[in-house]
Length: 150
Image 1 (cartoon, helix red, strand yellow):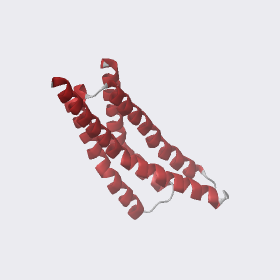
Image 2 (cartoon, rainbow, N blue to C red; image 1 turned 90 degrees about the vertical axis):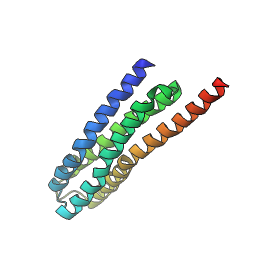
Image 3 (cartoon, rainbow, N blue to C red; image 1 turned 60 degrees about the horizontal axis):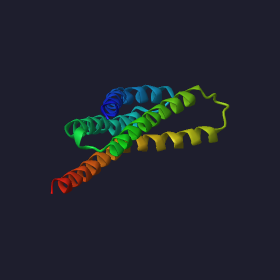
Image 4 (cartoon, rainbow, N blue to C red; image 1 turned 135 degrees about the horizontal axis):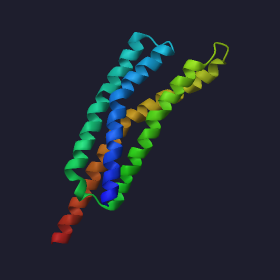
């Protein structure tokens, strides 16, 4: 179980790093793809809160990590792993959009843009999902602990 906790801590650290640098990367990739400053400012504001939420998740985990069952630790670990997929996908999509030629059919760009938007919504939702898992697992672990005390 100690290895699992260390794995979660490592993934949290990578997620925090990604959260810090992700808005800048998206901004510059957006500029390359021809997005306006106003559009990119909205994106930057959306991702500004992401950093705070990920840090709150890390603090919640650190303060109650020993109260989680192994099952819940595996769930947290899996959510953190999948979050890397959702952080990587927009970068790849924007890089692909930047390399498209003007003669590329517009529907390809439309599909990529829709996919990009979906991934960005998921990325913003990931910290909330992690917080819900942390809170629910903490409550369930506390109830189980109280029953065993009686």
